[in-house]
Image 1: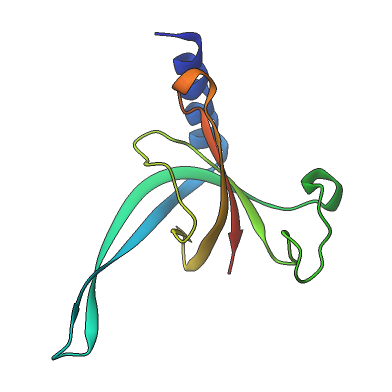
Image 2 (image 1 turned 90 degrees about the vertical axis):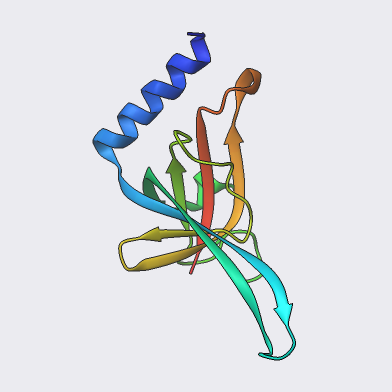
Length: 123
């Protein structure tokens, strides 16, 4: 086991201890059915572990104003990569009854080993 594999295991262990169960939801549009006037969707849920935080103005390096990267009410999620695909913009994060839209993803991925995903979330 490499050093980064150990760091990923440690991050997962800490998130399991201090975080909570969340679900990454990926919705992929399917083929359009002209007779029904709708497109089929494929929804895939990935259960995982994460911790949600409010953004701090100085820590985020952004202001809390409309039309900026971080807005009032946005959340940051530290997500364990264990059993999880790389989240993408447009995925959703389900936390109980709250559903958050993924705005941005930062993968902590030294030497090709995912250790942690940092998500910017918005309702």
